[in-house]
Length: 186
Image 1: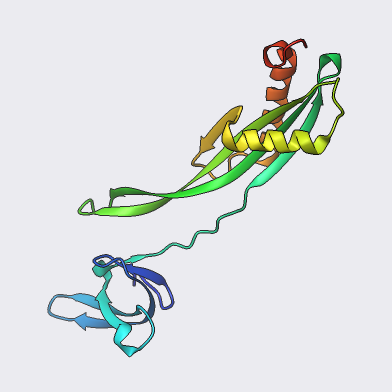
Image 2 (image 1 turned 90 degrees about the vertical axis):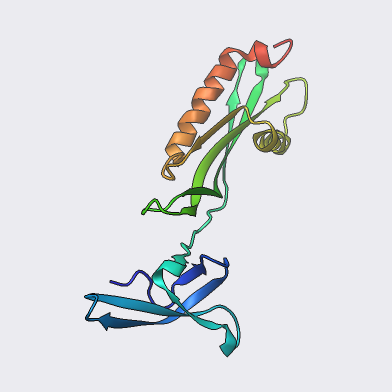
């Protein structure tokens, strides 16, 4: 069975050029009792950019959909009229790691996706005028630049909406119970 199909995106291992498989040819070698498969790959525009490669000279490009970051905001009531605004950001990061191939004979580059959860917090002082948008902007800025809580997972099913909500509730409960550690004169 062929490793690559027509219209698969591939990378030439030696040069790193990206291309598309346009056709494949299987030739049966009766003496060696095997089938030799070659691939015609289009590396760019023009006929001069069509080249023939064997299976070992190519690697497959795996398309990756990058979901956009997911935001969730909650406002909690704290003692003495304070309010705590929490903003969570869940996003997926793609990066590459080097690892050995399945045959353990060469080093290959593998794409790795990691899911991140960041939580930012802001406080409303009862002596100020309450503006939910200001609290949201401050908490979002802190979630990006200096998160109160930051978690990562390689399992992309992690940090579902229910999990994020539970994490926010637990962190808010801790902050509210220890509000004097976060806000002076609380």
